[in-house]
Amino acid sequence: MEGLSSPIPGASARSTRQPLAVLFACGLNAVRSPMAAGLFSQMFGRSIYVGSAGVRKGDLDPFAVAVMAEIDVDISRHKPVTFEELDEWEGLNFDLIVSLSPEAHHRALELTRTNAVDVEYWATPDPTGLEGNRTQQLNAYRELRDQLLTRIRERFAGPSVGNE
Image 1 (cartoon, rainbow, N blue to C red):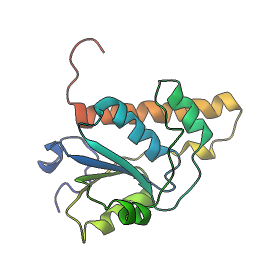
Image 2: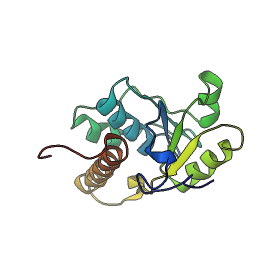
Image 3: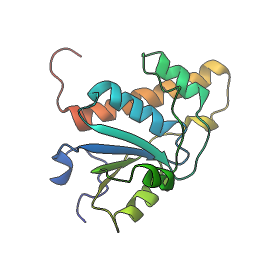
Image 4: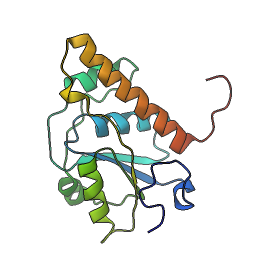
């Protein structure tokens, strides 16, 4: 399917349509996908439904919680879930799945066999493996947060207006 996993915003005709429900997915649903969902929720409120899931279930990362709190986004109550748990509890009724890791991307593409869903892959770094002191580790999470915020703005908010 053309444009199915296009990493470039607006690269296919399908990706220009604003989705009604977006799922952010990564390997553990503990860092990248909850951060992206939190940023998305802050930006769009309830105008577009957002969820997050992982291929496997991890534990919510305290560094992710800390860097999101720095910009007044509270993800501390996020409970990591797998694709299967999400499907069981509320269904996978999403127009778009944004996969943030290769593993999640493969799982999302599998879902296109049985669900009418668009999939986009956004290559994002995994800050959990970085060695260094606390400041260096937090800086890696901040870089991820800022990268996700930029991608969400570019993909969903369109051209910015004013002096941002």
